[in-house]
Length: 402
Image (cartoon, rainbow, N blue to C red; front, side, top):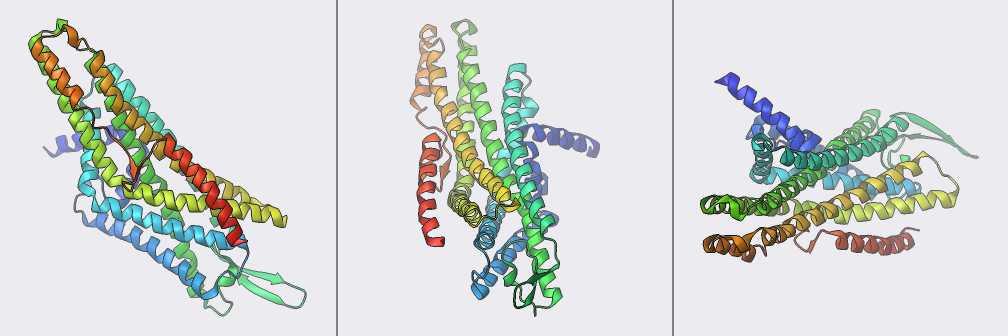
């Protein structure tokens, strides 16, 4: 029996790889994988990740309040970036942990779909959506890895001697923030503690920050694929199927449609606060990173930091686009179900089957949406408005920080 359970778990792990891509790493990191229910190790791991992110944000804020903006503008903006990223990362750990049952239901539903669907066309549709999900995550995690690798390699813990005309000053490297935040009189142990706290936090953020987005993105794409399969199957219902077969297929389609609507609503309930926090944080980070690049260009000190800031802008902007894209796709596939029902041969069916079709059309006014905090719907129109607002905020912040 134990051997069969292990084989079954291996099969589900394989199916999960196709269904949700590499975001399984994030699921395991925050302890929401189906087989981690109430496991001590998963609770400790998620608690450790959360504590490190909060501690790093508090440490940077404490340095900011005590020493202020004593360095260059790019260093100050990097500190603001770190505080924002760590706080949002902590939220991406906490919220899924509070909604574990919903997450497990979505994950297990995806596993069951991959385990039960045997039709070649259906698996092709699912593989196509899964491929785009894995590709988006691979690009995001690669870009985030490059950002953090450049920051940590170029800013290893060491003393730097800065010589001026009148004196020589000893400063210390920091991953985030200006070197003047660490006084020369600070003990080496305290300096290294602060440094490695930020070090482990940024590497933890590399896994969790894009990992959470990848899970939401892949889950929404999987639901889109299931809607497309459902739309294709209901269009194949003809008057040649026979009355009983028609009623059976219509009933199955109705149950499947209801299940997909439920999954879409669960995903929105779980993701809407995360999406809202990302809209605020990513919009702010894109603006201040652009200001840092302009400040370096104005000072004539263009270097690797500007490339790093450019990659950050790409990562945060693409995350916003991912949510708007998948929100548009999810709503579009849900709306296509109405056309699919209308395009079936309902006019040649029996009166009872036609009434069932009419009932489906009447209840199809409920669609799937991804929303930001339940305030507005994420779609292409929202992406256009977000971009316009970011440019307006960029102009304001530029005047404030200069």
